[in-house]
Length: 355
Image (cartoon, rainbow, N blue to C red; front, side, top):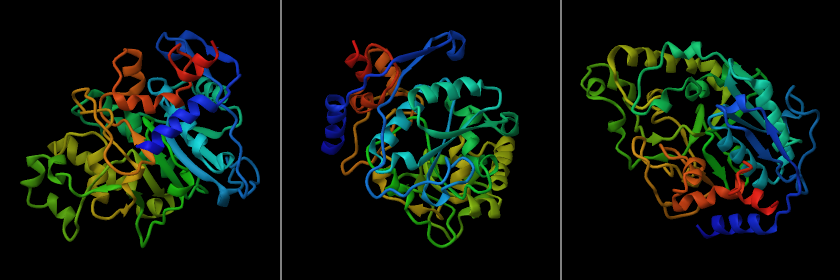
């Protein structure tokens, strides 16, 4: 806890951010003018490998840390803060390349313009995701937001991204890193494992599936010979080569088809991942996903940090820090998100420094 607070305080007190505020037309964000400040310019530290090209065409592939995220106007403020946090703590920020997935119907040119305003030197590419490709498979969830087709884009990364992209770190838009992302990038996926994520074996794994599932004579056999544990899909290291070879997109879709017919779970895009990968993932240190900070999926509630070291904070759950801050009803942990907020509201730390 203390290192996280120290990082936040140091960022607020020591960073000088004399850049202009840019604005965009109101129709871009549900009739709310989108304004973001330009982030400080983060440069590589000593010893960082030099890149050939910008990484978007495969240049410098061996030296890049590739991060995949979804991108839309509803969660844009969170995405910008997440990117800011990655760059702020990266030992080689110029070697981080972002692969953003947006709805094919979204104004991707405007989204790209906003990103370039906030991060003029950022290496990134935006990919269009056909909502209809997964829309027919989505069933209702405990929270309407979980039914957004973009929540399922992580299952299609191997198809959307170029074949030369062999590995990515997938991050949700409601995370903040307070550690060097290179440490997460270099986690090995041993054996034939396709993904790595923090596991939580103390959680009641059975609750993620319905009685319909557990009472069936065949369905639970998917876990035969395994010790499945809960893991959160908001932070994953993914081997896209093995994913493509094993056709894991199709395996996930197969479970979604069963769900449409028989209602075997309640929680959106998570259970299909548990069904396909439960008991067979690379366990990553839990410091890389301090999740649940958004509270319950139904009720917006405040939660405290768990004991122990923290490298990544995750506001999974109903409550998002930017919403609670705007409503003047923040949770204590939301103060840890604020230093990375580039939105130009008068309450953002960077905006306040420019008044």
